[in-house]
Length: 426
Ligand code: DOR
Image 1 (tube, rainbow, N blue to C red):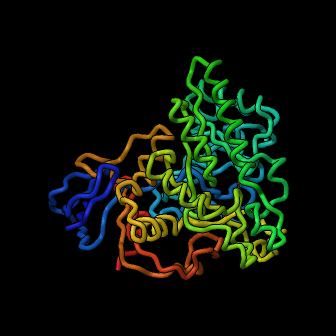
Image 2: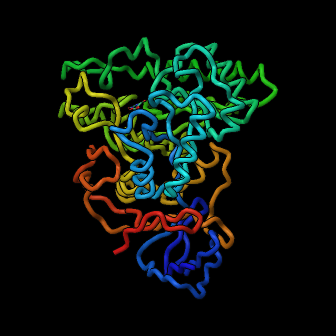
Image 3: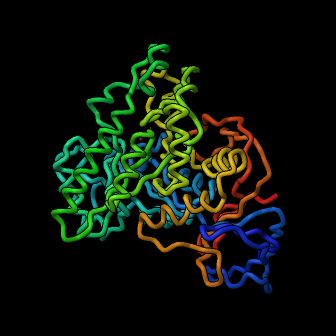
């Protein structure tokens, strides 16, 4: 039994407490205290449901030089995540039931965050032939996506939505038009011109979202089951408007935004630092403001990291050659707690919802609220500020665009079904 005394509570229902939270048998047994072997003083801290990341690149199998399950899932629990969806753009891509089972088995043995592997929508993520949605679901795949690649063939996407919906699987898309994006390494516009760097236009995202929403309409019309589209790492104001319009029309579509698109803009590229190279690219202040509005008004359903680790050597190449991606599992919550909640007054309740019930509902998982009987997959957060120190990351990617930023809201205890998987209490 574990007792967290005098701790403030926050979940999608709101802020309350302080309470004395008694945890045992994998559950919250009481909010009024009780006898326990271990007692933690929660004064000044707050307790939330464990976070779920819908979008992380853990690089297994085949790219363990960048990250592996052991380091990625440790980074996850340090970031307060109790659940995580791994992306299938590995070597080879995760496109078979065997590969999904192998990942789940290995992750279970690690006993860190629970892994919900995504599987490829198309074989080899080549965009040509569909994978076996039914068998993948049976093996434990959480969603289907060719993330890391764009779905250029609309017919394949439509067929994929139809097939996935028969098994209740969402299809998630990396919405960028490859022919518009071309070799862009940053947001297209006057700044890219000034810096002499090839641009990736915002229309590449908006055009693809518009197309995918029409593909969804078609799939809905043709299907007795209900196809469901999730848009990954939305980065533009125009993309957001399209999703908003589709939601108002009742389409079954959800969308996520990343910590980097919510806290950084193309201005950062003036440094020519390849750490900032990401797909879709960092946009403008106007886009960032629109995304924050989208978090508030429900156009965006989740904050997902797109944790994308690469080796130091790869990220030390110049901007034209370095790979795309920003790692963020260990800083995502403190970053948004500080930059959105503390600095802009973004409601904490909604912020926590975007890390918990929002992404959980996309996977069809029940919400976790801090009530008697609730599953004790929880995170204890400390508002005390400290700087981001990438050299201490558990992730193999020990670099960060936020290095040195002073943040509060650090996870100091993470529990999965009552088991301690991360502890950094003073
Ligand atoms: O920046 C990115 N990195 N965007 C993606 O879509 C893929 C990811 C990766 O796998 O590194």
